[in-house]
Amino acid sequence: MVVNNWVQQVSLKGNVIGYQTPRACGTEKVIEEDRMRKFLSLILVALLCCCWTTQAEIFTSISQMTDLIYTEKELVQSLREYIKAEESKLAAVKSWANKLDALTRVSTSDPEGYLAHPVNAYKLMKRLNTEWSELETLVLQNPSDGFISNMSIHRQFFPDEEDETGAARALMRLQDTYQLDSEAFSKGKLPGIHSNAILTVDDCFDMGKTAYNDADYYHAVLWLQQALKQLDGGEETEVSKADILDYLSYSVYQMGDLPRAIELTRRLVAIDPSHQRAGGNLRYFERLLSKQLSELKQEYEPASEEPIQLGTYRRPKDHLPEREAYEALCRGEGIQMHEARRSRLSCRYQDGNRNPRLLLRPIKEEDEWDSPHIVRYLDVLSHMEIEKIKELAKPRLARATVRDPKTGVLTTANYRVSKSAWLEGEDDPVIDRVNQRIQDITGLTVDTAELLQVANYGVGGQYEPHYDFSRRPFDSNLKSDGNRLATFLNYMSDVEAGGATVFPDFGAAIWPRKGTAVFWYNLFKSGEGDYRTRHAACPVLVGSKWVSNKWIHERGQEFRRPCGLTEVD
Image (tube, rainbow, N blue to C red; front, side, top):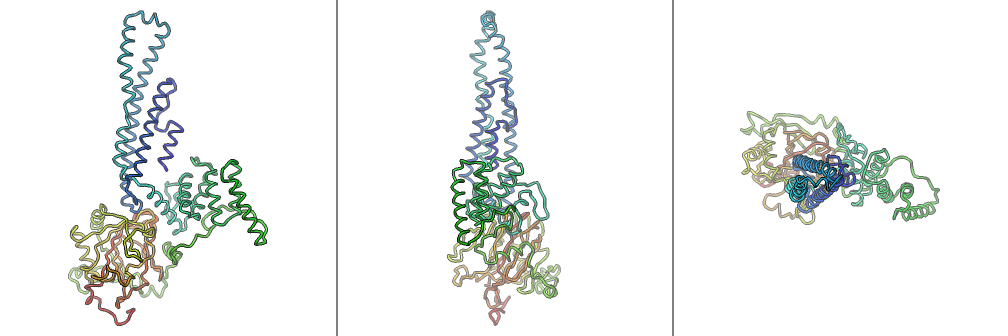
């Protein structure tokens, strides 16, 4: 959208590239405008090609998005070099024009007298035969070739429409989870943070259109209303007020607010009486409202003058039954940590049952929750180890998948927004050392555990409530190593805001702390799944979240964690 607006501004204003349009010479103006049209055409072709050759889902990983920052910086430098070359070329053309302008003023004042001098006659022949050809060659030079070539190299790494849409949906997800109104977002005001990352009228309008195209009229109303508010406040924009009112009035109608839909449509008709849909929509809305009032035997009440904001309309229910509890925990609300429970929690040094590797340097262990028992280990990973793990994982990051509960097939899902990579001990001694450390701390063998999974969360990155253990009794993946007995979760970064691990069933929230790890059992000693361990990774509001998971399986633990005698033992 930013690039499109820039191209529109260039075509409308003709002076965005950085030089003044010459007025003294009509020929120069034509040359310049022609060159500009060709250059813009090349840019548009390059940008359109991006949509065909890009890698999708960049928005799901902050790590991969950081590479785009440096790509954009390089393209800006390339653009500046183009501008410099174009200005140098134009200066040369201007020099030619000034020289020839002076000559033609003299020659046309007395053509015969001018040509009477043999030198002037010779120089006229020479100019028209040789020098004008040189000028033609200069004009035909294309300084944009280097820039377009650079664009062609980088365009395969550009985000595509799916990335833009995914990032827009991520902002809406953050808006819902952390109860942020559109105005706060548009002004860059996030909890504890104020930055110059603002959203323009056009940005808000595009957010609203993204929601509208998804038939998500709840979010469409919020963002279109914000676009209208900023436009009414005098902000310059490319989008028209009529377009905003058109989308907004229909979205409000879809939310069931007929009086406000009528009021907005009347505003649309007032500024654009010939609008192709407004008149018909207005008559339809008025008939529908009249019918409803007649059936309910109520009097007409004008639309509320209060602006539409967060809370004006109720967000529609979705597939997640514990949505409200989950999002409240992400905000730090509803945590069930009362004094009686707190008194049962403690911290200690843990040596892994006299494990030789932990005797001289026992691990620090803190209770996070009593039942089910969740512990946090401190100083599990060093900064150097974290950086090495990230270095190994970055080239392998791919969109994280989930197992379809019906088919058992791995697939991507909107409720898991991150990228992950799998590392094994043979990749680097650091991975082998981390695996051994997990075995020493937990007392469980990692011989049957899964590879170390490294995950990086993108814009609004999350993983909605889920179980780590399989609930499919005949899951073929469980035949050899059994179910996921336990989860060992390493936090490899601090997160400025959001990103907690929450357990909606019993109201716990665990916040990321770099270098620490949390551990819990997913199965009872009987082998039955502990359904209380349903948990979620809250959307990352600000920051970049890195974690690594080690899922420890049942096989090989027979004497390390013996079976219990009851189902929930």
